[in-house]
Amino acid sequence: MPASAQGTVPGSPTRAEGRASFQKARRRASLQALLLALPLLVFLLSTFIAPIMLLLARSVENREVPDGMPALTRALDAWDGRGVPDEATFALLAAGLKEAQQSGQLGTVARRLNFAQPEFRSLLMRTARQLSGDPPPAWKPALVELDERWNSPETWRLLKRAAASPTPDYLLAAVDAQVTPQGTLAFVADNASVYRQAFVRTISISATVTLLCLVLGYPVAWLLANLPAKSSNRLMLLVIVPFWTSLLVRTTAWYVLLQPGGVINSLVTGLGLATHPLPLIFNRTGVLIGMTHVLLPYMILAIYSVMKSVSPVYMRAAQSLGAHPLTAFVRIYVPQTLPGVGAGCFLVFVLALGYYITPALLGGAGDEMISQLIAMQTNTQLNWGLAGALSAYLVIFTAIFYFLFNRIVGIDRLRFG
Image (cartoon, rainbow, N blue to C red):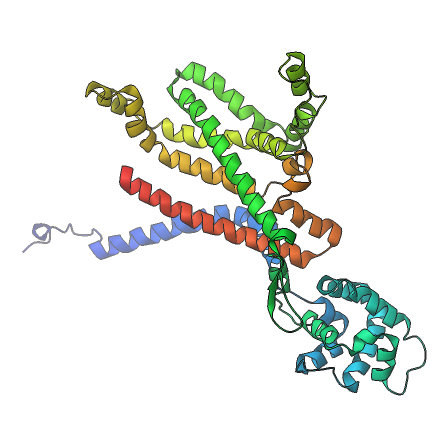
């Protein structure tokens, strides 16, 4: 039978050859796309992902004591933690203090140990100053005579924990917990906790700001989506303009407006609505106002993008079948906009979790968020380990919220899709 009768033109490629050629073209296109995106990937890796990973790694690193006194670290690692170490370990302690003092690392070691116990820095510094003379016949009685705390098992257990790497101490301290010298886990009382309350406060403020942005942003997005194109574009400029202004400038403007002698209080007292200036700054009210103003455009744009794709035919069909306009809006229109509502809430909530400038300028002593405590640990306390632990919990919580949000959105799409 001729080849043309079998459906194959002489000289034309076979089906297998055509499939191979198609796969080769796809691989070539994918490689070209990867090469085009490679500079951006390298930039993100070097300036965004790598610094975050390094900061998170600091939450379990514990290199101060091992780097400053390596011989003592090895001895403490072999010590069983019972009673007080032997004479050889005391000699290594004295030698390690001398070596750390000469290399300039004693301050770093003392600062790390001071995180475990506030008196440890003074103990190390005082001991190191007394080691400048001739060595004694035995280091153990000499150091115990110098300071009785060297004869305490708890002091050596704390030193052993501070010399271990990796360590869970920073992760525990970030939730107001610690391992006692006896090896048990202890939490700070709720009325004395700092970081647990800060996490709860951060979540509470972020959720409140998200709710306020949703209440204020949904009507604005609906108005923009249903106005004529010319009017909608003009109003959209008012939503986009804040993105062209620095966040610090906008927050400073609220600082001027909300203070007791500011524009808002002057207007309120001038109209006779209040006899005294309202407390609008250095409290939770100022934080909510400032953060809502900054994050509101994100909510509006997320909802607006979905509302523009909702056809008005559904509302007209529901009303033609006898549904009240409000009923049709709630049961027909709102469910179709839920993907935009979910995206806006997720975006605003996640951005609010890491806010720093607005709470720092407009909030009071009881409005500190986790971002402020992280900045304090890195800039003031120089405790990068605790800052990394706080950042790790914030990243973990954000990831959990993302997966929960993604699951809920998937259910909503199945229900209303």
